Amino acid sequence: MTEQIVVVGGGTGGAVLANDLADRLGPQIDAGEVAVTLVNDGPDHVYKPVWLYVPFGQREPEDGRRRLRDLVDDRVAVRVDRVTDIDTEAKQVRYHEAPDPIDYDHLVLATGSTLAPEEIPGLVAGGHNYYSESGAEALREELLSFTEGHLVLSVVGTPHMCPAAPLEFVFMADDWLRERGLREDVDITYTYPIQRVHGNPHIAEWAQPLMDERDIGTETLFNAESVDTDAGTVTSMEGTDLDYDLLVAIPPHRGIDLIAESGLGDDGWVDVDKHTLEAEAAEDVYALGDAAATGVPKAGSVAHYQAGVVGQRIASEVRGRPATATYDGKTLCFIETGMDAASFVEFDYEHPPSPAPPSEKLHWSKLAYNESYWLTARGLL
Amino acid sequence: MSETDIEPAKTVDARGSACPGPLMDLIGAVRSAESGAVVRLLSDNERSLTDVPEWIDETDNDLLATEEGDDHHAFYVEKA
Image 1 (cartoon, rainbow over the protein chains, first blue to last red):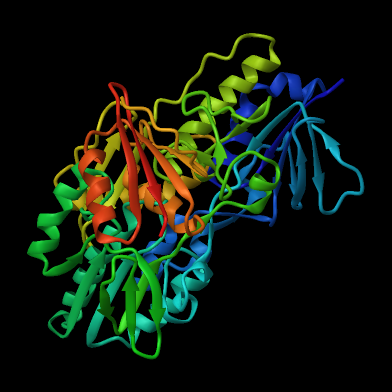
Image 2: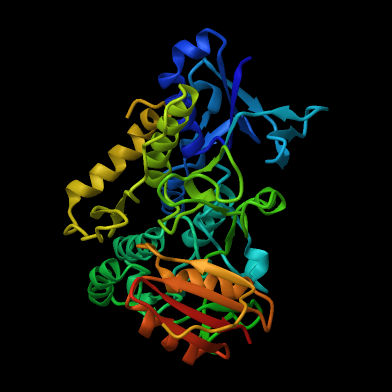
């Protein structure tokens, strides 16, 4: 009987895991004892960090796309389909394009984040974002014609992908506008939901002086509740009104509905043990990356490290051994501080981040990693 | 820790949450909660003892109770 491993979602976590499993369990797959299926709702793998550069004309959305089939080991079955139902009691998934449910022995949910701007009245019509391909392209067009006024970057959604990206955007916008001789005609305001400019106090304490030096205004304890597109105003839950000429928002995020429908967690995030990444509500189900409610950032590095843990655990289980690998919360982020400088942070559940001084070297390290990412997706780096 | 018998509609377990942090998790949960629902936040971050009341003061939501413990704290927030 072939042991079936099903990985749902072909983003960073799913692709790295599929390759990790093919590497660890290659002989068993070749012998027909194990099968690994990677299910994705489209043929492409998308590397989302590229989108930050699209509004500034430095990257194109297609730079972040590759065929999933080209990135994943041939021993992995890539299925372009949607999972429409998960029965964790019967250990079955149902595909949109298949008549009967499919049995699994091990299920991994790497279903990522989706955007829900419609949850904030007026935000769809009034707000731009760079958290989607279409959003980043539309924002690029808007920025090209934006020569004066008030640019507001508002972090609305919590949690959201890449907690560093809102800081990066305002730093890059400041630099980009200065280079184009427009900065004196553009005010920039950054809003954040809590008392600081970032959720992590160490990063906030590092970023605030940089923002002050660069004349980037900050509005903290600001949770956007509605956007009035006619008046050009965004209003917060705390009762503050802010006028804008160009609103760039980090929209609310949700996981996919299937997670809640399967009883695995709320809002599309799977409740997991933060160390083993096992689902709390079902046996033989793991979650990783954005889909896993671990309290660490929804970031590619997290999905990457978690994939190695889940791969090792499943390989142990297949071999009949106790799974011992655990995730320690490791997170790694480059943070752009302009168009030619960046910082870097690394932290885990026990050790807080300490941002490195911004440098050109770190900026080029980030760009170099974005290119070598394709080796990560292939399981090589 | 003084125990409360408040039954939360949702619990946000932010223990060990390094980034973006417990208050961010709480705000996200309150935002999606129904009016009148109680959200319980579990946090082992000492800053939550000041962060949470400060945010509540800025909103119409109510902090019904705070349970301070050795390992972690619990905050009960009722959405306005």
